[in-house]
Structures are given as C-alpha cells and as structure tokens.
Length: 224
Length: 224
Image 1 (cartoon, chains in turn orange, cyan):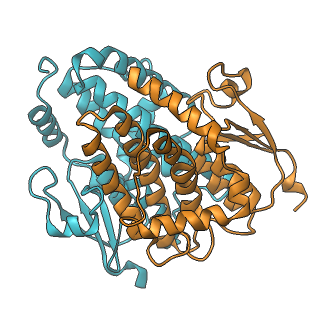
Image 2 (tube, each protein chain N blue to C red; image 1 turned 135 degrees about the vertical axis):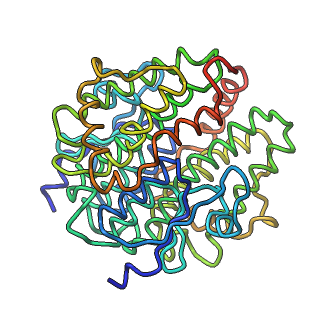
C-alpha cells in the first residue's frame, strides 16, 4: 500500500466542482496527496504541459503518470486504491452511475446555471426547464441515503460537487429557490446527508467566497 | 451463454453512435436483436420507455434493463461479457487514456467536423481549424500502431468509427475537406484497416445510401 501512496498530486482550482470531487474521492479513500492550486486565467507551464489538449483542471498525477478529466480521474482512483469503492461492482449499476454523472455535468450543470443566467426565454421558463432536469435526479435518489445507496459513491461525488456546493451558491446569489423542499423532498434530504459527511464538508469551497465567485462568473456569461 | 439472451439494440442505420454498439457486439460474438428506430420521425413507445431522458439511440436492452449513451453501453458490454476479445486495457492508467481519447473524439473532433461541414457559415472556418487540429492530435496518438488499441481494435478505434468511415462520405457530400491522405497518413492507413475488419464491415451502412442521406438531410455547403 505504501508504494502506490507515493507521489500523488492534484492540480486544481478552489472553486472548481471538478477539482473538489477528486479531493473528496482521495480523502474518502485515505490517500495522501499534494494539492497544487492553479491560476486558471494565467495558466502555468506545468498545467499546459500536463493537459495540452484541454488546458484545464483538474489534472491528477500518480507516479509520474498524469490524467485529466474528473470522471476519468475518479475511475482511475477507484481502480488503483481499492478501499471504500466509489463505483458499483455490478456492470448495470456502474453503467447507470456513469450515465447519470454525464447527465449531471452535461445537462444539469449548464441547464441550471448558464441557461438560467442567460434566460433567453425569460427567467421563469429557464427555471422551469432546469427543474425538469432535477425531476430526473429526484427520482433517482428516491428511497436512498445517497445515489450510491448506503454510502457515498461516484454519482454523489459528481452531483454533490456540482449541485449543492457549486451552482446552488449561484442561485443563492441570484435569490432563486431552484429546488424547493416541497417539490424536491428527496434531493433536499440527499443534500442534508451530504452536508453531514465530514469529508464532504472538508472539500467544499467556502460559501461566501464562492457566492461572490459565482456572481463574477455569471457577469462574464451575461456579457459574453 | 445465459448472458447472450435477451439483448436488443435500438438503433439508427446511419448513426456512427448506433454502429459502435453493434460493432462491439459482433466483435465479441454476442447475438442480439436489432430494432430500427425512426428517430427523426416517430419515436417508438419502446424508445421513449427505454430512454426517456434523451429519447435517442442507441439504447441497449439486456434482460429488460436499458442503457443509453454509446460509450457507456460499450463499457457495459465489456464488463458483462468476459470474452477473449477485450476492448479496454486492464491497466487503470491505460484504461483512463483509452477513455480520454474516446471522449476527445466524441466531444471535440466529431462536433467540430460536423459544424465545419454543416454549421452556421460564420463559424465554418473556425470549426474547420478546430477539426483539423483535433485530427492532428489523433494522428499523433495513433502513430505507427496498427490500431489505437494496439494490435487489435479497441475502445478508441470503436469511438473513432465516424473518422474511419463516415468522414470520407461526409467530406464528399459537403464539399469540405479536412482530412487528406497527405496530411494524415496514419489515420488514412488506419481507416482502411478498420473498415476492412470483418466484424466492422458487417455492420457498416452502405456508402451510397449514407451519401444520399447526408445530401438530403443537410443540403449542400452553399445553403445556410
């Protein structure tokens, strides 16, 4: 175990949900790592060298090998450090976790943040359309403590880092109650469960700082 | 061979995404029932039942349970049927790299090619440049390997099926040339070997029908 614990580094950005989810995974598995905060505006030569294709964080480094893209990193971590598994063993359950994680990052993230900021058809419509996406997730988590079942899994890390601890903070800044408890009781219960987890709490960006950050990001989107 | 029972594929005859799933099933010798979906016309109740979120093909149905998203399906097939013909490497890092390049093909290269050929006029030059650069990365990644997967067809080769077969037809139909033999000798060589593979050949849609389909659905390069 000591061998593969060596030389683990993570290049990340404090407000990036993609970075935060990797940290959650490493902490859940008790893997020590060195965190290297990146300036995502003036990108370091190291970042550009390690991720020339996308030039983005996070980038994970393990014994000299580097991997970009958070979903790929999470899977790599799960396959390399076997304690506290993140992905289900069953092929179908695993496929579902991967499918929903893609849905969260590719549909929910943009739909409930960027599209709401732009509100091309008006804010009411934008919120309604975003809520339709959350309806799918509400159904997925019904009757479970976490998307992963009894314990935090892959989809919890993806959805957790993206929704309550990232885009929700932009809703706060805009005064929008996107997923009210009456309409989304299961999702709200899940969020409570996530907040109660010590490791999750350790890995989320500070609330006030992030609300400010998301406001700035929203401004950039509006003026683009 | 219990696992071989009750496998259905809901697909579209001309879709590279749909064909990925069929290629892998054929490569692994897994029998399946194919159901053609009228995706652009009338979506069947079966499609809406099995993929209510995206309402798209391909969908794999195995023993009554459905999975959507072509690359998620391919991984599911790999995990479920342990045959001698493997698509993904065992090593976690090699696996991550295979997934990375497959994702890159899907998210960057294919999208750019499509927009370069049929996107809004104002964007075509920019998209052509992006598509060209994307293909250059793939050209370098392939190098002088027989296939992206090494000696045999693997995950990235399957993901790049559009480049191996559809791209030539798309270039002819749209009048836009991005990939030439002179600038992309590795990819050129690879595509010949790829489409020559017996299992791949079996599922590829006829060239003249694809060409007619593209011309009909997307018009010529002179129209907006």
